[in-house]
Image (tube, rainbow, N blue to C red):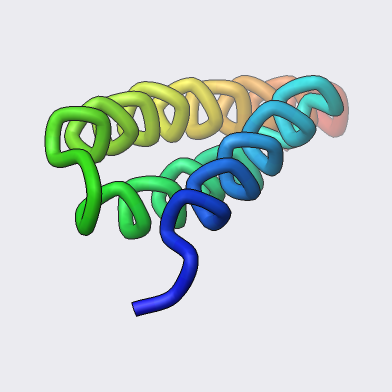
Length: 77
């Protein structure tokens, strides 16, 4: 099965680093990887990670839409 505890720690670090650098999409991916590792060892934390991924992905999508609206307003399209 592998080192799930080590995987959990690594994915938590990935999420934190992605957030520190404003990389929302990578944070979402990291949260989903984290959830997949937690599935085997801690179901409650697994579900919490999925919830965080959903919340984070909504913010990433909102940010992307705002940037797109801003870019099209700047170009007049």
